[in-house]
Length: 325
Image (cartoon, rainbow, N blue to C red; front, side, top):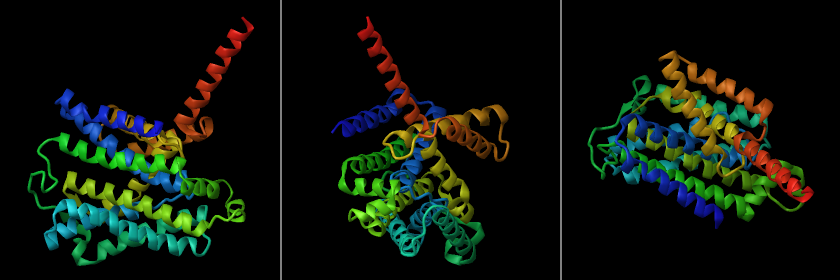
């Protein structure tokens, strides 16, 4: 109940920002920071809670993005229905990836490489077939209206991605307190021990992959609705996978607010470096790499874990001082 209340407070607070300012720069920052939160939270479900490090989560992102465009372009589906279908098909891709990976016991670096390979295979396919636009990519037809999920202001997109972040936070809160979440964390800590007490690692990891993939698919669909264009490199390239995993690692894997804190921190750093160094290609990746090295060296539990430990030590010292007095 406490987690749900904090989630509601967070969502309400962020949702009020468009009423408090009309600054395009600030609203764009909020929108893209929430988008980064969604990516990190989606990765956190499988990587943070399940301990299954994926280097190719872009395969689910790109599937959702392409489907969002194609069903509108070729079949004239409503974008809201397309969003649901994008999440569903991305979940199906997650099911396939999970079955092919976990059925043969792949984990650790092997699983990471397999997911990376899947993303590259999908990128090559998207470059080769005509209905994806091949190397040219696909444009989303422009038609600004709420019914077409194309808003005239950034506020509409903020509320849309905030709703998706709310769903991801609720799922994460459920994982923290549910039996399924306990099974998933047990597998992360010691898969053999979890199997010994009756947990089925294959089934649990498979469902975690499906949930994570569906959320990544929703991020892909959102991206397309905002920028109205997608190509194979944007959809299946490594940047999205890196942004998702680094956000979760920096903030604190396996926690509720870690991916949110990590994504906001990295997005703020990215904007700062852009202002300092201009549009220097690859500067964001350099910043991500540098921050990741620092976090791994000095804060292995991420920013949230470090802050939690620091506060515990602080309160313990304060209580010791009162007792001695």
